[in-house]
Length: 518
Image 1 (tube, rainbow, N blue to C red):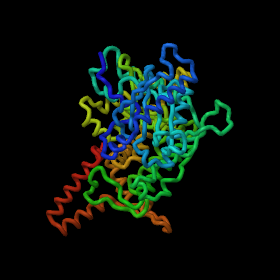
Image 2: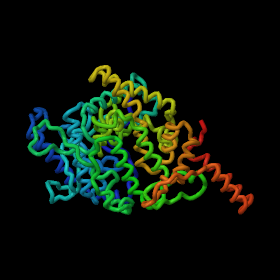
Image 3: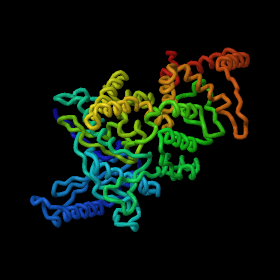
Image 4: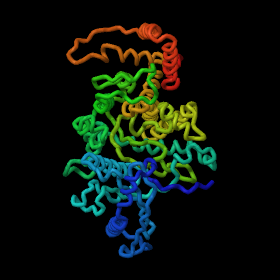
């Protein structure tokens, strides 16, 4: 069965609608400068390698530059040479406001990708040329923008066919694709590190085989030039974070960074507040869901995986960044490595792919169900997680032996619990639903999670102010609700009772099945 033509958005995480600003940026790019840069890079390669006798002489080489579909973060152009070599140039959309932090992050990404390409058989696009700075005076960068030139990726994007039953025929199966992917990720997991952080060049004068150094993250929040983050205070976001020597320290730092960003404002709600009241703004740096997640950081990540070794993570391990063979369904490329770093084991190379864990993020799963005609059920996703974990165990057993394979397979089987916790910490919109999901996993009852959040909001631990001596203050959810109901009835009569019924309905509708007493 043949594939439909694929949009060659090979090195972008997702496509997006071009804003007027982005359109103006794309129109400003000098295609002649791109062509000259591409030819210079290719001719330099030919001059330093054994030339193909059938290829045209370097002086006769030509290059056709063709715009590709814009990604969410990069502008892409195809570079097709007359010797049939095919590359892509990626230019960040944010390069007009390119910050020192962005320069450092791009450098770390390139160090990591080249290390992966040199030490594994993981199919990452080979990088042929790059410039991390947008300043043409800082080096040989005729574009005036940061850029990366790398291989053009051939194949079918997994996101385009995963939910198409008619595609999985003629020997192509989802299980075969997952088996192929697991082999590559086990290969990546062989690269181990003693701390969590970004990769940087080895020290000057180190032997050629010296692995990269682990250094601090430029930020765990984002660029201080972003308006929302700048409001939180530049100092809080510009500080380097890490490296970390434990999963607990890493997740705690993430939570602290989020608290710094949200300090002084009420949390956004993806649904109306559960009791019909406006969200309570706390003058400190917290809200009940973040306080609840702080408790889960200590409870959910297994202690056996808390310390080294750590492994590299794919920063967006989702189906739009996996390319597969149209004939066999096996993985041909893994793209979009922006943000790659050494991570905790359950967030690194052995983690479950994101499209197999989407049901653990109810907010994302609702969008997934709405967008897909053939959406995987929770039961099917649970089955596929087992399929992938078994594939990791088999692939690891070939490298490490049976005991090692079982150990790595177990890392994968429980990884979605920790990856969901990380999403709950870093993503504001789905946070409430994720808190209920993880809470039901820990406590077995959505109603209990609801009561715990209410209790945290009113307890002395959460509300203690600096300088106060801690004390125990009991707060009874049922008594308080009864008191509110009676007070409302005495002042507003039947209208307020109707409001109380509405609030109860809102409460029971919050976070889907969060209050399911099961």
